[in-house]
Image 1 (cartoon, rainbow, N blue to C red):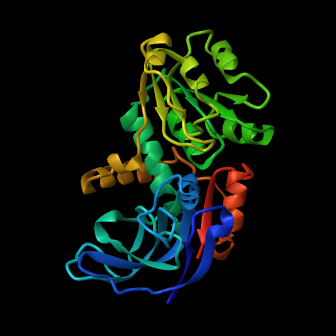
Image 2 (tube, one colour; image 1 turned 180 degrees about the vertical axis):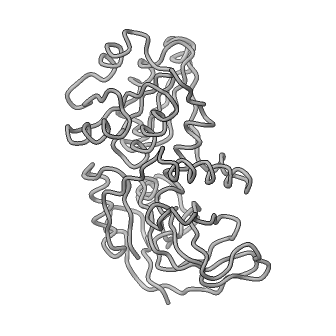
Length: 324
């Protein structure tokens, strides 16, 4: 038996139940790993509340973690007990140990800690595909990043700045503004105090942005469209404030022949080759100093309900880890 957090009925943070569960031996093509750090993400909230549907009940939330291999199943030749590994994989992360397909794991370089690995696989790979694949950020681009002081936001601001972009971020508090400025933002907008569309127009001298990265959703739409130059790209990759409501396709035309996309990480790491490309690029950016991984909060796994409450209440900045 191992300790894990399960959801037996979707709902609020109280739905997260810390309990003992069976720990099966790894089957063909699988690895059993002992987890040292687990990443906490807003997608975990979506599954807990039922916004995103889990395959069934009960289920173990969590989509990224890092640890060490303790056993391998038949046919696994590229991982061995003692290997330091990390993963992004749908559900099952909130546990002290777990079994996972070997092809979902990547080896952690010596210079990447378990804590860094645990928050880089979902958040870091998300930033990788957003800035390198969905829209290839290049020198001179102007980008708007909502929730710039969050786990994804801080990484995105740093990496966009390293790629030569002019970075505008939105945040909710002065403290978060200071944090975003220290992590690559050229300008920060306090959206609770300022009209972020008007400020983007002012900052850009009405030239607006090439791309908007919006993980907030309902409350920042449709303002995000108004921040884009003609033929700019609206990238909606999250629903922290609720889903973007249905809108008329003509709105893209009205705002200047805009493009819009709703990507997800699974489609960018659907093959082993894509996963390794993303992980290698990401780890190299950390090792080379382009990316600093801001882990500002850590909770014991048994206190995960408190962690969810703080995350939903906007009481956190940067990445959050759970310690099994």
